[in-house]
Length: 539
Image 1 (cartoon, rainbow, N blue to C red):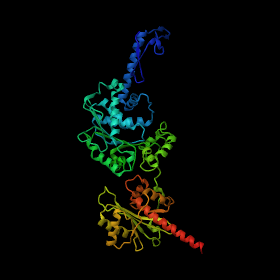
Image 2 (cartoon, rainbow, N blue to C red):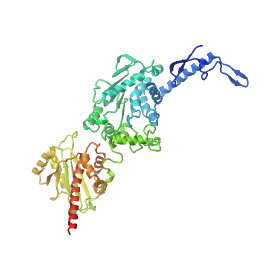
Image 3 (tube, rainbow, N blue to C red):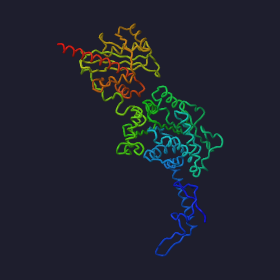
């Protein structure tokens, strides 16, 4: 008696044979059915033939499903690559595959002009790399083996790992049985870093800042362009952004057709996602999926897929697990990597909603002395830090009124003229003072201002604590509603944005000046209260 091979759920032979007589659940000596006209018998050989044919048809059906659907391909590729692991399903997998990636890739294959590239922000451990970076080339080659892929990450080792995983999918029995005759690797130019198909398609990998000269592609996949541990570094962020602008995007063979996919967690206000959206948001299909339902979700209609508890992936990221991650990661990293927000949810150290507004007509200017704090850098180069100056005053109750704020990129002579003009337009009198810290450029600015103007320049005490500590010391004044901003002033929105995203923002001049001003008012208020209390006690 001939033995048949057993097949797994994908229709692939398991390599284990079985004797039909030993497994009556599959078939028996005969298949008998009762009917009004009698009994129908099928021989064992015929049963074996029908079963084999059915398994072959099921396997072909599944192959066609995976060919047509990137989502189905991803499910089976996971099983083929991770034989002992179980993929935990969630709505985002189908959404990214069916609604975002597959339509864009099929457009490239059809040679149609593109409308947008893709940016995907999603928490780590959500299969983002497996879907977008590992599986995509293997599935796309089923449709067009000549497609060219360039993959990049912040680390050369990480990029190489993704390259190797794609190659491992191609060499699995599952892939070979289904598409091995159609997608074949070339015997030459076949390394871990770079491999080709026999149709001259290829997948290559590099890292942020790595050489891609001479290499052109159809699809560029940028997966985590910056190391989360280095996201606070301005040099690292700007290097990643510049590399994307000047190197990667020039590598598309057909810029009007080729596709760029950026997939990452948000790490900073001006990380690559922030950089691209600020520069040209209309050029990108932006998908932002936070671990908890927050206002960062995009597109907003995805809220329908979140659980009743407001969780994106409750089977994997439970409420208890997320709470533990807040402790382990810290609020800043949790906000970026898990909530996809470069600022702490609800505000950072200082929240914009804490500030109040005032109009000049509402205050008695005769009782307020307008002082100024300045942070000088004197440079015309916008890649460097700007100079900033702020006008503020306080009343007898310790309320602080911020009248004006200015940020400029000027060299020293022009900066001196700007300070003179700014102070003259914003309440300067002979009673006013202009405080400047004696840091590197500050001393030169102080000397020049004293020499060329009659302004009351005061050398401020050098800061002893870091910026976070300084703003934290005075944040209670803002939270208590004692700090007012000039209503409808043109600078207010930028000022509030900078303050609220601190310490994850690009600039911190507003924070520096706010800390300087509030510290002086707070010290003055406490001294006045002390004198008043002492006087009353001895009256």
